[in-house]
Image 1 (tube, rainbow, N blue to C red):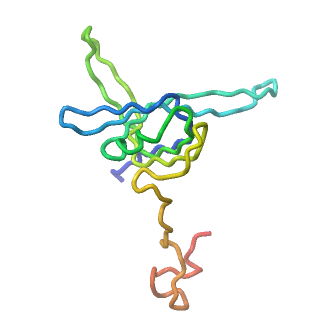
Image 2 (image 1 turned 180 degrees about the horizontal axis):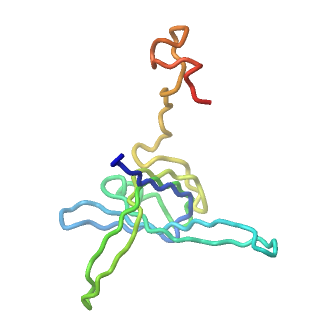
Image 3 (image 1 turned 90 degrees about the horizontal axis):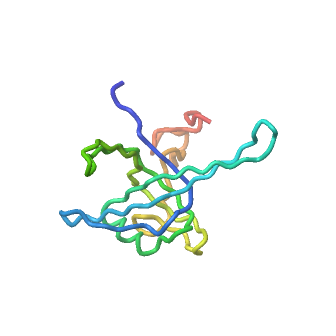
Length: 152
């Protein structure tokens, strides 16, 4: 199997207002910093929290549209992939950064009182019929799956 899986899903809060820039080719690119916090019990049974900061990049018109409504503190869901880039700094040192290239952003509400929306059209995702039983009795038509074929 030669194919791999590179998928990231995060729920967190924006640490600052997103920054929108344009490439030399006039393509929009929005950068965001997302904080995710997990809580756990330490050895003394005391609740502890650990916050991780993530750099998220969103390209194109989605970035332009979301930059207008996202603000520091918004709770959002990010879906995308990890990407590592390298460059040389002014001193000639090779530098690396790993970031999340977002393919989907959903507003979950949050400090700024934002509503819920999607990065592509502002609405919720359409329902999926992938595993719905068929209408043609006996489970032999439509999707080709009957009740006995569903793995749960």
